[in-house]
Image (tube, rainbow, N blue to C red; front, side, top):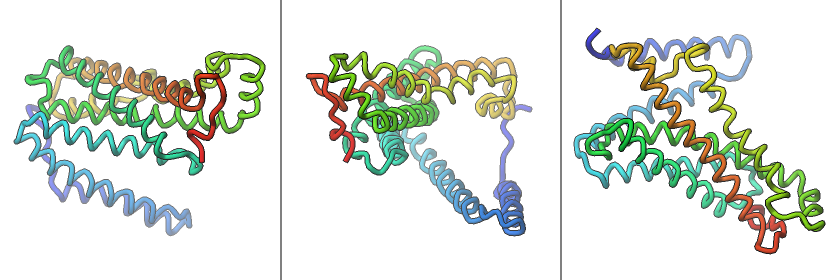
Amino acid sequence: MNGYIHLSFIDLSLAVSLLLLITVLSVILSIGIGRTVIIAAVRLVLQLLLVGFLLLKVFAVQSFWCSLLVVFVMMLAASREIVARLKSGVQWRWSLGISGTVTGIVTLIVSFVALNTALRSEPWYDAKYFIPLTGMILGNVMSAASLSLKGLLDMVQREQKVIEARLALGHTRRETFNPLVRQAVVMGIMPLINQMSAAGIVTLPGTMSGQILAGMNPFDAAKYQILLLIIISSAGIMAAIGVSFLAVLRLTDNRDRLRIDRLFK
């Protein structure tokens, strides 16, 4: 096989028929997931076809600013998604600021390093490499940051009196919050750890599978997958740590007092 397999809309429609079968089974068995599955499938098709069309234009332009604009919009969407997964009682402005800051810094730094070292694209901001790599990093950063931030804020709400008591007894902010930060970070990075542990034994990750289907040597595809998993996992771990520490800084003041009003309504 020397190239990728071209898919027609007829091929896609055959795949969609599987979802229609699931919808019929949902109605017959009264499971009630048919509507949810159809809406998700319609969104999937429309969003990916739209993105594919837009990327064709962006790849043709080959402009640094155009690529950066696309990445900026992706980061805004990821930051909003992180906040949307939090409880309704959280102040969205500061939560969005924390998630947006960490998401933007981590994603841009890791993408820049990867594109200028291991991947060595010319130029480094080549949209064909910059945007897909950023998208993969963002997905894992969003997941890790969301789980960590939600876990930390849930624990602060649940253990508010304990935290205030420890601070009142003279414990520093670091001593009081470090156990909570550790738990929050572990919550955020556990899916990444599981993904790395299961790769190759339980699953063949998407990038490796796609490259093999496109005709790449399986050994070379494995090396690419190792590189990408390490890059995106590193970014996710940094994001989990970043949002947790920024949230703690916002939840306390310079006198080591709990300021829960700063992140909660």
